[in-house]
Every structure is written in C-alpha cells, then in structure tokens.
Image (tube, one colour):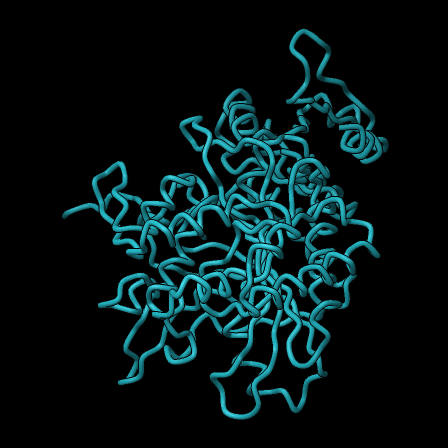
Amino acid sequence: MNKLTAKLPKGFQDQWGKTLSLQKKLLVAIEDNFKRYGFSALSTSPMELSSVIGNSLSEDESNPMSDVFTFDEDGEKISLRYDLSLPLSRFYAQNYLNLPNPYKRYQIAENVFRREKPGPGTRLKAFGQCDCDIIGKFNSTVANAELCNLIASTLLSCGLKKDQFLINISNRKIIEGLLNQLKITDQKQKQKVLRAIDKLDKLGFGISGVTDLLKEKRTDASGAITVGAKLSETQTSEIISFLKTKDLKELKLNLKDSLSQEGIKETEDLLKNLNYGEYSDLINFSGKICRGLDIYSGFIVETNLTFDVKNSKGKVIAPGAIASGGQYLVSKFKGDDFLGSGISIGISRLTYCVEQLNQIEVDENQPVLICVMDENLLPKYYELINLLRNNNINCEIFLDPKKNLTKQLTYANKRQLQLAIIVGENEIQNNTATIKNLLGTKGEENQFTVSMKDLIDEIKKFIKNN
C-alpha cells in the first residue's frame, strides 16, 4: 500500500493556535466597526457563473481565465470567486428591487481564490477578505470619504498605531488621461501599462522593474520573462516622471488631458471632504497607485504598512496593500448601469503582518486541565468538571488515566495551558484541590492548595490577573 505524503498544495495554508486566535480577535474588531459605519451583513456564494466572474485578472492573452479556478458543471462554466465585489454586483442586480438604494453591505472573512503564482509570506491562492461596499446611487465624494475614514478607523480598532500604516488615494482617471495624452490607445497595451504600475510597490519591483515592464520585457531572478507594454522611450519616461510626482498641484499643471483634470478635481474634492473627519492626517495622495483590476473607474485607495514585515526565513518582504479598493461602474447586467465603491481588507495578510508586531494581546481562553491521579476517582473528577464548566471556566480531563502525572503535565505544557488542577486521595480527604501554575516563573512557588469552596474564585482570580 502506497502511503500519501501529508502536504498542502502551493499557495494554500492552514491556521491554528495563537495565529487563529489573533485573526478571530481582529475579525471581531473589523465587523464591529463595519456595523458602526452603518453597513449590513451579506454572504454570497463562493462560486459564480464564469460569465459573471469575467477575466479581469489574467495577463495571459491566450488564456484569459488562467488566473481563475474554473470548472465545467453539466455543460455550464462556473468559477470560484476571485473577489467579493463581482458577486455583490450580481446579487444587487438580481435583488435591487428589494434592497435600499444605496445598498451598504459588508462581508467578513470570506475566502477568495486566485490561480496566480504564490509569493513570499503573504501572497496566497486562497485568502480571506473583509469587504465593505456602497452600491446603487450616491454622491461619490461623500461615499469615498466615508470609506477612507472606515479604513483608518478599522485598522486603529485592530490595534495598529497611527504611524504604522498610511492610506494612499488616487483616481484612475488621472493615469487614464495621461495614457490618452501619450497616444496609448490600444486597450491591451493600456492594460499592460496599468498592471506594470500596479506592481511598483506590491511586489517590490521598484522603478527599474516597472520601467522594464513598460518597455520590452522584464526578466525575474528565476529567468522567467514577462512581456512588457512595448512603449517608446518618451512614453516610458513620461510615465516614470508621473510616478515620481507627489504633488497634486504639479500634476494639475503638467497633465492637460480633460480626463486627468477631471480625476484631479475629484481627488481635490475628496481631500477637502476628508478634512471634515478625524483621519485626514493618515490619508495621502499618491500617483503611484492605480489598482490592477480593470473594473475601477475613478477613486482608488491602497493602504500600506510602515513597519518591516518578514517571511519565515527572516527576510524583509513587501507584503502588499492590506486594505484597498475603489470606485467602479457595473454595466454588464441587464437594466440600468449602477455605481459601486468599496474597500477590502485582506484578513489573512493583515493577521500575518500584525502578528509580527507582538503588540496585540490575544487571549486564547485555554482550558484548565483536570489531571487524573487515580482512575477510581473519575466520578469526583467529573463532578469537578461540571463545577468548572457551570461557572464558565473552560476545562478538560486528561484522556488517558493510565499516564503518570509527568506525562499529563508534558501534554499541558505542549498546549501552553495555564493551569492544571490536581486532586488525589489527600485532596479528597481534606476537601481541597491543588492548583499548578504551568506558566509561572522558574524558581518561584507555582503550586498551591485551596479549599474546594474557594476553587472557582481562585481560578477566576488567576485567569483575570494573567
């Protein structure tokens, strides 16, 4: 019999222990804040018709669905969602008569799936997202300011400090207008340019890497070649100069195309509106962001961390944006077009990065271990279990009565449990219990005996103080 090797496919991960406890704590903070901003919950199907999903991701012209997991189901093409916005658009188009206008929804910790090359640490083929979107008819300036404020408020609620992240905003119309000005009219070439710019900070390509992608080709460290946008030297130089410009007023003078001017005006209005809130100091204009997906039509946002993030080998990596999104127009469904704008927080990536800070306390609410000193005392142990659980104290009994105390405590230490309760013949006779502090400082007294009537109070006191 051939036995299988236990392993995951590349680009997927398991989560457990402290990491999973941290993620759950972050999710509670995120969902509470989404509700605080007036969004209501929605959960959409993880699979959609391929025609709904579309092909906004792929850079492979010969296989436009190459980045999406697609299946043939009874002669019909269906795909795993690669984001939560398109399923929302389908849901809204299907149910808009029964929904408020605008419709504000959030989805929390739902996986999306992408058939792309996994990267170091934070780039996965399946990862959780937490989305907030406003969809229908609304004032874009007010809505987009609210979304920016939502990002800042949510990340602060998650325990990040103000100097640990920066929210960058821009408008797709600005760069689209520049492409018009440079006479870049071919749609596929435009797409290549936008995706090249999108890689500037995300994958750590830097200006030189983006320059290669704007020209003929880029060759990575492994020798793999990515075909470039094939721009001229002048076109490439103009785009690189644009990426280096940080001042919106300077862009207003340099960019003459009416679409660029429209995008600049929308950004100025947004920045003015943001000054009414309390997070304007955390929000910054940056022409370097453009968002790689084709759906965006105006306002765009990306939030980056300002502290070092390392991979499992201790190497500093570029983790990419942890909260991003923008404004889009939905025109693919029958009926009138409708506007959407939203943000997405990558919970898998956020958890990975935040865990490295070690500044957010996580209570795993570990159980108390009831040690088995004598198999004949099992009835007493179950009385003790019922007492603890009825007082909202998590507990478990060691599951092999034949193992000695040393092995039972080894089990507890491996699980990093805080407390073990030891009750033998002496404790039974004296109506007492011995509490052992398993995480105590070596050399100190970490074991004490209490009367059974005081046991609950002593356990709760210990848990509260630790």
